[in-house]
Length: 161
Image 1 (cartoon, one colour):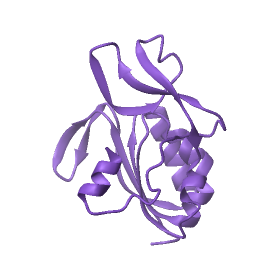
Image 2 (cartoon, rainbow, N blue to C red):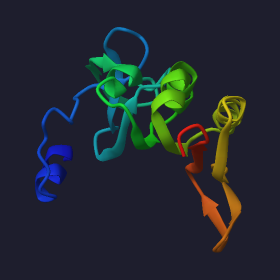
Image 3 (cartoon, rainbow, N blue to C red):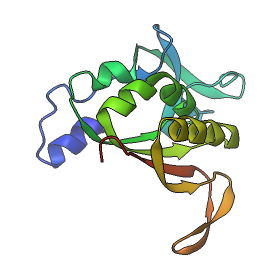
């Protein structure tokens, strides 16, 4: 789908699509691909503990770190991540690279404790919060009260803005 989107938008792939999961294990990880037999999962992700016991299908995939993905770029305008509970691991491990290269981060969040940890990491690193809407609750937004399933956090790197 990523390659098809690039093609439909007149963009060359040029190695931009990496068929790997972002993780810090240094080895292949289980990757969720479907739920039970009839339902498809449209947000594939690195499997959480117990995923297979909960009936989710998984395959093993190679990994890459965010630092490896970002290594060929001097600056990155936006990192938009929806990592299905793995956002904690990426931010905790890559804050130095985020600080040095990334102007803005937009994150889909999935658990309140992860949201809390992200706030601590970004605030400690001097990032400015733009949006912070918690997951699994109703949030006050500029457009009124809206129920959120996934939460949303957006941060701007004050060093690079």
